[in-house]
Length: 274
Image (cartoon, rainbow, N blue to C red):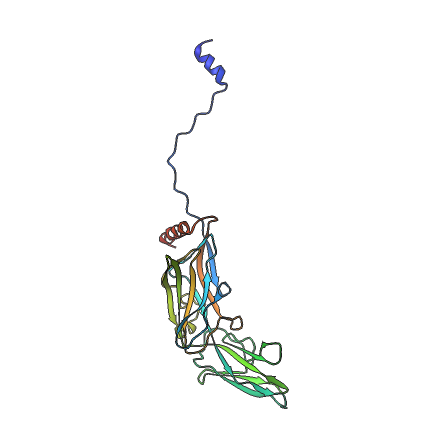
């Protein structure tokens, strides 16, 4: 047996030829998906102070995820102002009596509205405390946009110990900002600002008329999206107000990634033309 045949016999069947070495490819960008940041994602921030800008609500970014709010992203926004009036005791009355609530800045929107009276009006939400059970919805009888008043009706035999109305107002202004902290320094990156009057009177279901985000924003773990407001009238972040906030966004989830890596990849996606 020749030397070549001896080596072949020892090696056994012919081994597959190793593939040529290839240059290492850059890791692919993460897949992204459309996301919606809405009212339920926010937590209450500071209490309202007349005339001062306050951080009304904040959203904390979850871990392992980056969110991109692209320039031109859709914004749907209705923020409700709070109004109250003194109690009305009609427990000894034989007929219903009106309770008129002053609502400064009351504005008519382009939302579809039911006929009055209604307890499901999209612009005005009314509540009354009639006993120990707390505030409960009551029908809105009339809305006078010119006078800035809302009329309710207290039935005979009822004592309304507290009366609260939440309504859409044209008075005030708001901003969305990205808040980030590092090295003891806090920075704010504004992505949108406008007045209540300008946004509340738009047709927010119309693609050409609805508001859109002016400046893109990137949020990663440790960042917050803040809603800042300034208003002469009371605004509070509460379930009773039923504020409506929706922001279109893009979410990228990378388990175990650190904040710097998430932000780097999000910036690459944003520069890619989202």
